[in-house]
Amino acid sequence: MKKETDITGQRFGRLVAVRSVGKGNSFQLQWECRCDCGMTVVVNKKNLLSGHTRSCGCLRRDMLILRNYGRATVGHQSQEGAGV
Image (cartoon, rainbow, N blue to C red; front, side):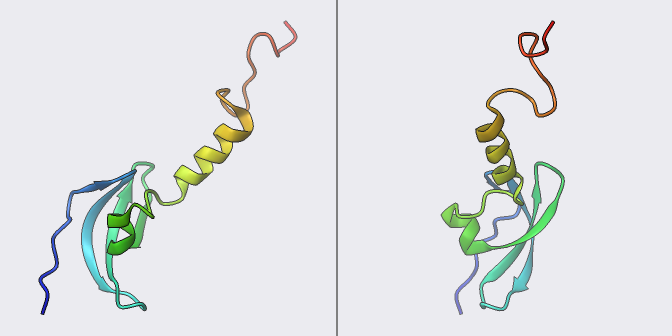
């Protein structure tokens, strides 16, 4: 039987591996991870190591906000745009 490497404490993008939670439906080893935003998610180890999964979903949301609103913070206007 192949010995699995321990990735506890390792960072993968915005995720930090907390503990192994066994194998999922696809027989892939699953890891509980804590995201920088505070969420906890369970991710396939294979997806962590390949870089396919890098956050709980907050990275995608942040990239969409950045794409749609540029550098401005959502809900705020610059002095020029405020009509002052």
